[in-house]
Length: 638
Image 1: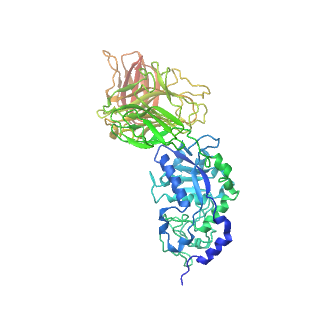
Image 2: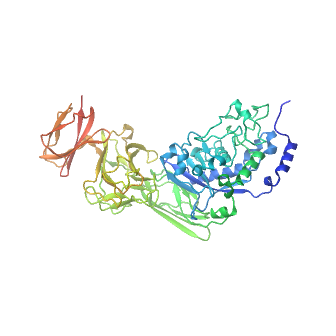
Image 3: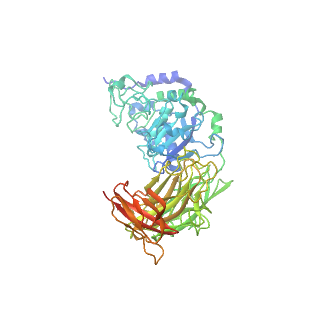
């Protein structure tokens, strides 16, 4: 005769023995904070998807998932309502209003180990910290169990891929079970075959015969080797039917927890180990806002894109907190609906302010973001595109689009590399690893044999540990996707030798020039955007000036009537002689990556310039004299 799971009479006795802790208790409530650690990718999931994920988590833990009807009959009698609920926090650790969601830009999202918790970590005795990342150390998610986290408070919490959070957006129904599984570990449940898979800890692999001798320390979950596939008829240990539909298996057909798992979780919630016993207390629920009517304290919104083409749909989402009941939008065009979310398309190019007024029936709050939406020009600018910021009167009056994640943004300044004005990004208090972007109008590169991007910038570090870096990106689809054509690293970004602790204001010699060549043929179209993206890393002010996008093959001396510069021999193996209309000139040579490999303030006409140390290849020579400039190609051969 085949053995199955423990008989019903035994469970009647079990309930009597466990008594009061399994019945008639108000649900435990756990305050949650979700930290989205992102690098502007799909891992930066929406507020809507986060709220959906928390709702599904509570649904599963309260045995309200609609697929409980599919539980294998023999396990239905022990399928448990875990009597634990989860809710996004409404007050932060300092008592300030929050929606329980933080967004931090960091490249650590690509690895997703325990180090993401060093970026931000709310007190573990008050909040369940959840970290949404692109890659969770090669797993769908991971979490320390209480006994593991007890001596590692900084590692306490759950790390999960954004594509496994909830069942909308970047996730789906199949993947939505992962958060319920990881919370099981957080509340002291092993895998049903035993152990827990956490980076830097021992892991008992799934599907091994030795697992039949281990188990999960829960009486009513049958011994099993563990499954990564949904075999509902499996009997992997001693002829007992496996509980493959358990949330703590790997089979991705989870429907249930058991009564024994429920008791183990409740024991953990009443234990001081890793301070789980403080999470659900009345004092903590009041402190985190779960047991009080939190006020409407912030009007906020976001969109799925800030740059788009004419008639391209943009999704608008209310992100105000807490619980508005009415919305009045002004998107700068047309009449959007009075709804929490909607889709709108702009019929004309331009910059558009967006404002939102929300009310909870008593209180009203508003937010205005100037120039928030940029609809790309229908007619592109033909090259050359020259922007020295001289004709601007403010940031919103210029033809570039700024996109900033917080209050510190770009400013139009009376400081310049040439002329009178440049653009400045404040380097005081910017959120680390946030991206601050400036994007050009639509440019036409379709008739350009050899397009290049040239600009000047100035930057100083406050400390040698600063990690600021600059990326120059291109888009050919109205900002939907971007490629990076140049990254200026933290080591190479400073344009002055010394750190500057006070406000950095560049002088004449504090500017660097950048020339970007080799634009891919796929990006030589009439719909190109160029983006300057500074990733903040604690440094001083950043300045940008003299942006110039042009066809280098057509550039000649600017003043008519003068004979042009030329260099000979070309190609050359070791040196060239410079000939030109001026007695001397400034000479700078760039390699194909745009890196300056030679610079001299005064090179006499007829002088020889050595290139004997240069690797063979194509170079660009920049020749300048009192505002007259030309570029020449130079081929070094061996």
